[in-house]
Length: 442
Image (cartoon, rainbow, N blue to C red; front, side, top):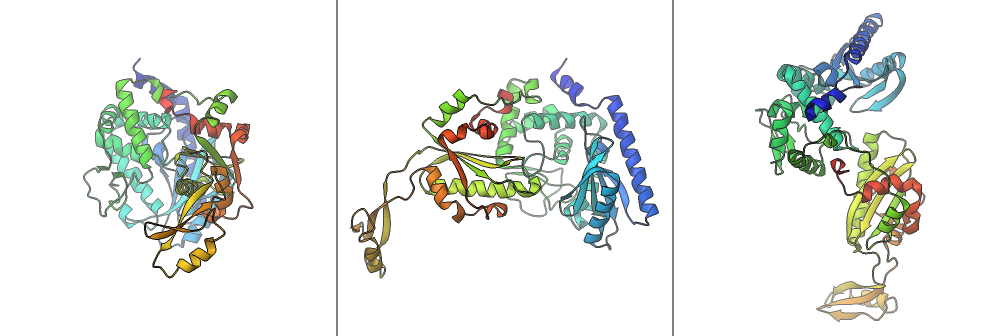
């Protein structure tokens, strides 16, 4: 059996599951219509997303929008949707995009009820979610039946290499972007061959000309709204990973691209060898935040970048940054080329003709390791460092750098290095950090 057929045999909903999906959707739509009529509410329920387009994998989510007239306030459509969601869904929880919406379960399927406005086109949107029904209609009218499985193959390929999903944690490919890529290139194989030749920046469209300039390294103009880049959530690193995976797949195609082996946790021996090696590794253990992932991850990413830049400025030559999160906390891991800085450093002062000279000399007359001297036309002094290792520098300076909003009020930073990294609490995060293999190489 060909690889693609074997993949499809594992990801396509069975006939029994498809019947369950259809039944659940039909029943939910009918319930929502009767609810609108009974409560005299002016919304129209509309199925969107992969189920509506026929590109869903096994165990799909149900994405259902409630379309309201444009003269109803945002607060009202959000409040109404939340009330209905809590009334009919199991385990309902409030989430937030541009509008508050409700996520829960309906007949065992994860279900999102999202309010939007009934606008005339994707360009006339009031908020970003108002475009989604037009995305659904565009794909339904441009994606051939024989291309639906090609989309499914692409989604599973991206899942396998870890970059399927536009959410902030993943920074990958949305389902809509997958569908547009297949419409653009025709089928999975043609797409893989094309991507293997990409050299970023990549600019794609289906004939539409973008109505504004985009700075991202990967651009796909939204045919529904040419002012939008559908690929904007995709990070540069994930664009490069996709290109890499396509090149590797063409050389040696296999199921490992679609269904890679789980990453095995490193043993004590493996981990100890790495943390006692030439490089220095430090972990920042941040508190758990009671926010949704799409709020958490931009804050965690901002904090991680600030920590990396601090260690870079201090001269530790950081080489790798890993971010991770679980139900106990959030973690930043950085490896540095330099384990320990020299005891002293040269602190540069003002030029010899500066009015600041007297103040500099007075301050450093006894504070430096030796008195200030003139070198190449300016004063300088040899000073003793307050901190010489990455963990010492972070303990001293973490509260003074730009942190994500939720991490600014930490009581005291928890900085882990050396033997402390052997704590099993950090094993998954450190395995992710040190394992250089790409998913298909495991």
